[in-house]
Amino acid sequence: MHEALKSRFYLTMIDGIGGIGKTSLALEVLHECLAASHLVANHLAANQKNPPVSENGVQTFDAFIWTSARDRELNLNDVLDTIARVLDYPFITQLPAGEKRHEVIKRLQQQPCLLIVDNFETVTDEELHRFILDLPEPGKCLITSRTLGLRQARSVSLRGMAKEEALLLIQNEGVRLGLNLQALAEDEQNSQRFYEATGGAPLAIRWAIGQIKQRGQSIEGVLNSLHGAHGDIFEFIFQRAWSLLSEPAKQILTIMPVFAASASKAAIEAAGDVHHWELDEALGQLVELWLLEASEQLDEAKRRYQLHPLTRAYAQSKLSQAPELESQARVRLAGFFEKFAIECGGDTWAWERYDEIEEEKDNIFELMEWCFEKGEEISGMRLTKSITYFTSFRGYLYEAFNFGSRAAETARQKNRTNELAWLLLHGIGWDEINRGDIEKGENLIRESLKIYENLDDSKGIVDALHNLGRALRFKEDFNSARQCYEKGIQLAKSLDDELTVAFFERELSLLAAAEGRLMEAKEGLEVIMTTLLGRNESISASTLGYLAEINYKLGYCDIAFEIGNQGLQLAQKTKKRETIAKISSTLAYTETHRSNYKSALSYAQQALEFYEKLGLFHQHIEETKTLINQLQEKLAK
Image 1: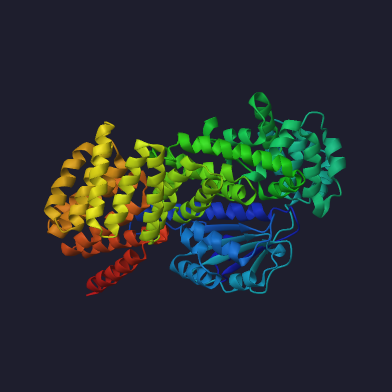
Image 2: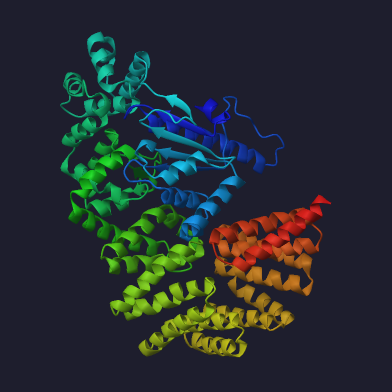
């Protein structure tokens, strides 16, 4: 396989009958390439001139994109969206078809990527066929298929393990599961029947051993059932395994497709409505039978469970026969993730546990989509609210706008006044400003302010005045912005909210900078930093970024560089993309002014990377590209 990937062929195909191990082989190749790629990247990061070359000749890539047509109809749009998300350019998913294809091809031409298409034989989309056949260099594609190879591909055909290899796998699986299978290995007749029944397919062998592990399942009984299954062996094994499951285990397996990705035990418990020892027994049984795969973390709270693609298809067929069960599971899961996200600070700027939400984001985004599509809008609205700050902070701006708009519309239609005001202010209003429609964003924030005033909600009024002032500053309506800030300061002082007062004073300093009073802005931000440092690292990072920019404009480039680096370190710690992009840009201009062109180029490229991943800030993107071109010209001289 590795020889094929390193050859001149850009397309490699693994073909063979169903259940022969095509998917497993593709995954193993992916993992080995990934490990080799990480090794090379680590050496390069350590500034070692000669990165290691794998002695086994493993091909390295910058990115790996896995797609599968196993349990759904795969088309070109699906693959393009997956590539965009894996390469961390989510904004591409919202482009028209032609632009989307162009942007994806452009990204693929910039770095070596490995695209994997599992179950290619089920793909009927001719556009996807053409896309794969015309995949641009330096990328490569690995496909698995039950049909024979494409003319353009280098094929690797699987025909099952040799008998000696199969017997070795049987023994190893027996040791792993605590079974003594020596008798099977030494019994020529039964071992031959076992080998013929599984066709030498590794996964089929593991499944069969898993069934033997179950109480009351003799080797003879399993062999009698398995013998002669041939190409239909996996379907047969699923049915056989299903009959061995306890009712709680059946319940868990059936609801597992509601997860778009791997799941925690707590999330599975919520969706499956199976608890305590019954849940432990069910998960243990499913893992033992290879119906679920478990990660290796010793900490139970961090352990993840996921379906093998084959198992997902089988479980999905079961779930499709029980629409009420699916609906109940998803609604329970929405409630669980809402509580989980709030505990992790997803509806505040408390970023410290955002990594936990990050791990669940695919599950949450898919669930939110289902809620809004299937008549569970209230659940979708509440779940959206619970991750509003997370999506903004981590730069998932398309999801923030998409779900925020639908959540706000739900709140409006259902007369959920409090939720509407909150979503307009913290979600969709600011999203519109980020998208460049300051007027629309301002109007939504004003609507929120009016609701909070009618509710006599002081905290809501303070927050609305803060965001409204920022919108007015962006519009260059400086007098109105100042009035908002001054009114907000008085109200925050009446609430004894020192930190919020500091936020407003920061905005007044930024207003001074916008009006050209840079020294006043500099001195104001320096005073405010004494309040912010140690109390709010996220706001501290962005404030240091503003302070660095002002020092740069004043010509204090050494100070700007020092402060900017301090802010960048905080921004990278909190993983706030927008702040990383903006500070990197400031540092790029600062280093250019100091004639440190190589350093400036590095900062500019980092700024461009994060601006493009955000998918907005188009003016900044063009300005940064211009700077990069100028720096490259200087370095080339």
